[in-house]
Length: 103
Image (cartoon, rainbow, N blue to C red; front, side):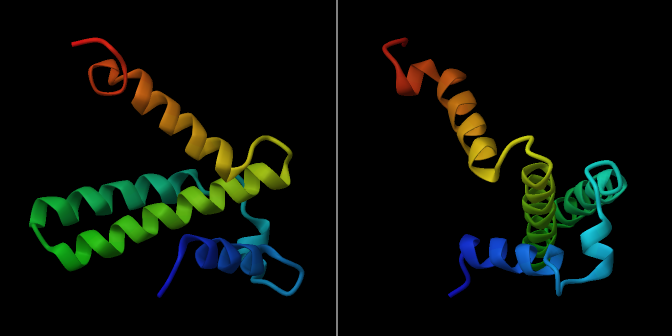
């Protein structure tokens, strides 16, 4: 069974010394048009109600999130775990009616 850790390892290999030249030269800025394109493709898949396409496009978006986070880590900006913590904290903060005492 595939895991998130295995996908992260694939990205590390692609960007590692023996990896893919294209992947190794990517930056946060160079991937910007690609993540936008993947978001549009995901929306198209959702609108088409094609679960197979939705699954594939969600994977492409996830790939970009991990790749961008890896690039940020390489540049000492932040790590994927920081991204996860940030969104987790945001969801808890935005839902005090679920995670707090507010009704």
